[in-house]
Amino acid sequence: MPTNFFGWIKFLLNEYGTLFWQGTINTIIIAVVGTLIGFFVGLFIAIIKSVPINNKDNAFKKVVLKIVNIILSIYVQVIRGTPMMVQAMMFYYGALQYFNIDMAPMPSALIIVSINTGAYMAEIIRGGIISVDSGQREGALSIGMSHWQTMIEVILPQAVRNIIPSVGNEFIVNIKDSSVLNVISVSELFFVSKSAAGTYLRFFEVFFITALIYLFLTMLVSQVMKIVENKLDGPNSYKIYGSQSQAMPIEVNKEV
Image (tube, rainbow, N blue to C red; front, side):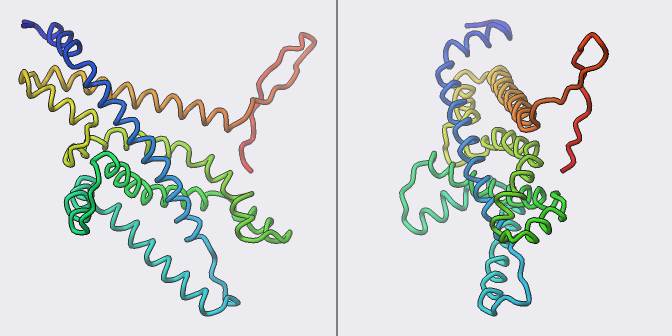
């Protein structure tokens, strides 16, 4: 058996490398799927909550929109106000058993993370919509565009660009928070790490490896999101100065 720290690291990687790999893959799947579905859930909620209620609207439309907004507001407040671990326990051991639904831990995890992320994304996207200058909305409406056309063609493209950093941050949060899903026996990275640590009782060495994997994933996501931001910014503007025809970068006005 190993007698020092690095010897145990090498031994554990050789012994449980496949287990760490499978746990990492499951963590990535949960984070990616949960973030994507949560984004569209949040987008739907933000668009619905942005629908204006005018005095000219009929009574039925006003009542329906108010009821829907109340329901969506309750959903956002409840999900954001309770820990994901509690939501996982209530969903997997409570709701599914109450309705006698047989569902594997992994699909349950995807649903839990998606629902949780959707509430946070709703507020993120709503903030992005608000950040767009109101004059653009007024200009679009003045040329005959409907509310939905204005949102899809004018507001949302700019709002999505503005919220890219926040979406990336939520993605990183999902990578780390997937560890709480071990309470419903999801074979993500933290769950398999506990299994590996319990065999030889080498908790420090095992979770040192686990921490490095989480750190690598979060740093990788951060770099990818920076690349996405730069791509959405478009190419830099250049101006020719002097007889040497040297391309000099100039500031790009990003205000729309």
